[in-house]
Length: 278
Image (cartoon, rainbow, N blue to C red; front, side, top):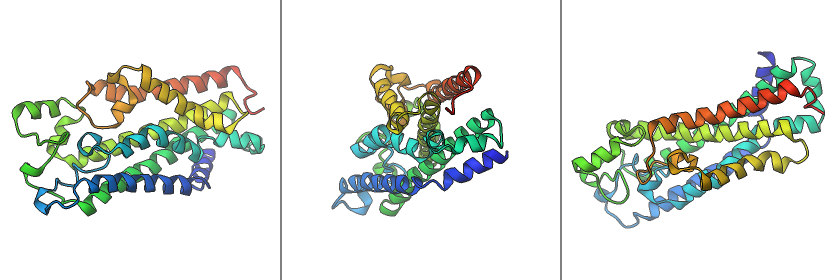
């Protein structure tokens, strides 16, 4: 537990963290401004409520900025916080000193947990900030006639409601849209943390270039966007949508599979290569 506390403390004191947070918050502000401009000049009674106008609701807001952020910016930014920690420790020779205080396995696991945790907390707060921005600009609650759940039209008929219920957490969407938004904040933050974990595992296999450690998981992520079926495509899972058939099982099992694969790769490397710090 001692090495884990040290790694978590180092992760939250990372010099990269403030810059990643600043860039991410600026991106969320840009997404929010884009959404607000779409209602410039409208009467208060015409505005949807803040839960529908959270920038992460891409299908509702039509904000291309949020799609760009979660697809192209969030993966490398999350990796840059602490995902390259093992690479930097090896390059500065501090890894050897820390391993003398704990086993190699404990050191690697603690670093992976710290990289995952700091990225999850950072991006969850970033995505929550965009929801708070929506609360500042839009009503907390509006009438049903102005409540735009999906796309650009109100869902007021049974067929439309059935479509919503078929979405992951669709029942929660209808019962409490704010909790639904927070669920996606946590889910998107989870994938940011997985990308940081992927960078950490990548550093077990290559120590030559920081750009490879940070950028390779993002490259794999983008390639998977092109080849993985939409029902299991991570980019589709990150943004609430009804345009693609996304099952609840895919929503839950896809991140579990990704983390299990990364854990297997790390365990295999540790099992058969005791010189990963060289």
